[in-house]
Amino acid sequence: MQLSCVKENGAGETRVALVPADVKKLAQLGFAVSIEQGAGAAAGFADSEYAAAGATISGDRAALLRAARVLWQVQPLTVGEVALLPKGALTVSFLDPFRRRELIQQFSVSGVSAVSLEMVPRSTLAQKMDALSSQNNLAGYAAVVCAAEKLDRVFPMMMTPAGTLTAAKVLIVGVGVAGLQAIATAKRLGARVTAFDTRPVVEEQVRSLGAKFLKIELGETGQTAQGYAKELTAEQIALQQQGMAKACADSDVVITTAQVFGRPAPRIINAAMLAGMRAGSLVLDLAVTTGGNVEGADAEREVVTSSGARIIGCANFATRVPHHASQMFSSNLLAFITHFWDKEAKRVKLDADDEIMRGCLLVRDGEVAHQALKKN
View 1 (spheres, helix red, strand yellow):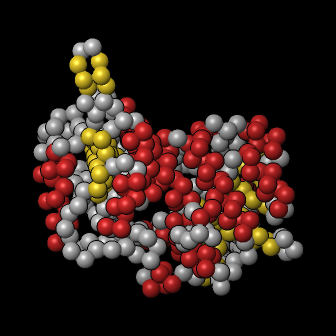
View 2 (view 1 turned 180 degrees about the vertical axis):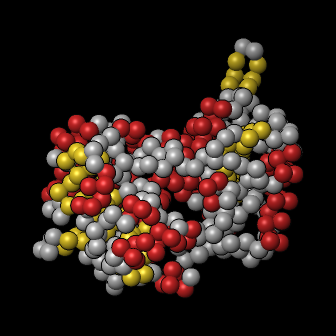
View 3 (view 1 turned 120 degrees about the vertical axis):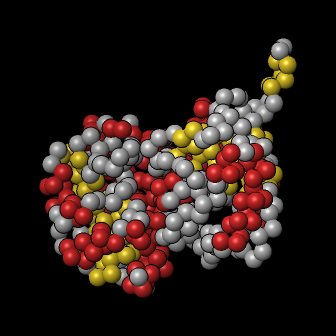
């Protein structure tokens, strides 16, 4: 069975969906692997490494798409590229399906099956396939490293002949995978860390990492069955902003990670809160591509507020560490393919009775298969 991987063409995307080490493992399953020339270059993987592992290198992107029975990508193809895929092909990538309905429609028209990696269930069995968590983990790390580089002061407390330098104060908003890694990384760099989340259940996790938990009374909140924070009401968001204003003003770095899958990110940091922050302080918005947690955040450029605080938005902080991000992503996809591989038939089983497949298979042989998409 032909498995193709083409070069990512999204702006600022540095990752590749397949790394050379996994080519041999795919060959052992029964795949013939082809990859577009230069696909791994930005992540530090040379064409020669793929060739040595047994992959075929091609400079003809369209031909790779037309030949693919399985296509691995980080970001989705364009609608026009989906039209090149053969009927019966399977694509596995991030899809952002609720904001890319025209893409779902093209999958249907082309008779292509599509798996959305964002929708892999968060379960013990699916943990090795959870690409969203693996990339968010690295995003949390990379955001803190970015902040440490750009902040006008050091992170750790230092005793010097010229006096004591106080540790930087870091506020993490949202204690999911990215938030937890951000807390751990900021602590390792010596910062004083405070974290906030609408789910009281994560307080113990925050404290276990050596950070303080900011408590704000919001009334009934909780989390979804998948472990994500439930969407707040307008009144609760207002209470949250009031409670966080002082914490933001007291912080040198604020990192926001709050997202609600399939909906715009909640607006957490507003202009009034930014105005209270000191000149030179940083606000990093990890949700900027889904609407942003921070008023005025821009994925394309750094924004300086009237108070002198700086807002940094990035489409995906994991792209700042593409080598390891690609390794983790490729491993996630390999685990997915291996789990659903039918050794006798030499094909991927699109088993609708399987909980994992049912959760992430959006389109099967051209028919919309996911209940959430059918409802919308």
